[in-house]
Amino acid sequence: MSALTRWNPTANLLAPRFNRLFDELFSDVPGRFFGDALMDRGTWMPAVDIRETENAIELDAELPGLSKKDIELSVENNVLTISGERRFENEENRDNYHRVERGYGKFTRSFALSSTVDREKVEAKFNDGILTIRLPKTEMAKARRIEIN
Image (cartoon, rainbow, N blue to C red):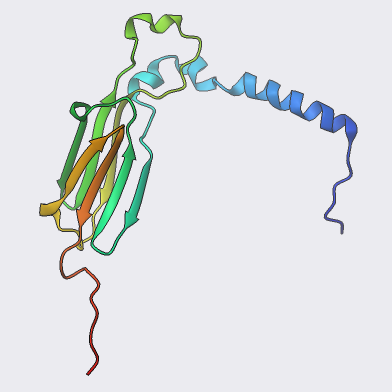
């Protein structure tokens, strides 16, 4: 059995054209069937990075185009919730757009917190479209060195 594929000049010339045609035909299928209903219901979710340090769990959420007043942050029943809304910038001229790829609408992201998080000391800052949340660990959860006698 060979791991090589025989080169077919006809297929190699036609494949990109068929791929482009297929992409054009089906790229906006939801928009054709549902129109603005999808955009009005909120079709985007901010990307999130989560990292752990010795003393805390840190979360960065991408929220471009939003301000602090557009974002709500809460901790309830061991769940951290980020919610808000990104509004369409130019609502009165919406019909003039040929394509709208950026998502708009309401969003919610929720994350279950472990018992190692000190919920009373959660901190958040918002800078240049990035929401950074610091979830400090409880003293019991922090790694410590044990001396052997």
